[in-house]
Image 1 (cartoon, rainbow, N blue to C red):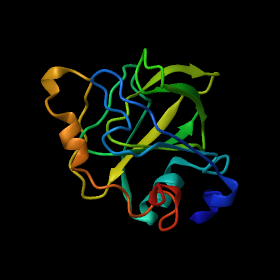
Image 2: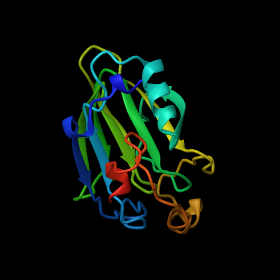
Image 3: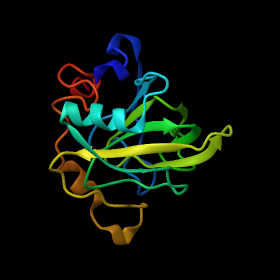
Image 4: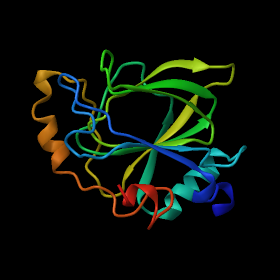
Length: 181
């Protein structure tokens, strides 16, 4: 199974601490960055092979395959790992109008680890191939919620601060980038 993933030394890993913006907490409550794994999976890796690989690490559990919502949202009950299965897209992290926002052009084979509180949305699909990704959440975690930075969502930051961070990286296990931040 590991033959579908590139070695960590061959994956470009970028981290982004995104500041709070209005009612969107971003990286502030966890002090954890958005982690972008460029070309984690080899070209042509199938959806089934990626799912099996992620399941073999035993840190997160794939739960859905879809695109990314076009509205900025974040989760207060779970961190989220996403793997890009097909196509390319421009994604926005941190919320509109945030001077510290991050825009990333992602493509098939890339993966991201999004800490709870970090807003994310799809800005646009790039190219002709349909953009599809797989979402995964920590094993035995509370079910993920959808937050938009609204007052009626309650103490999102309090919920985020109660979450445990990863002792092992969802894609590389012990010694992977998420375990070191």
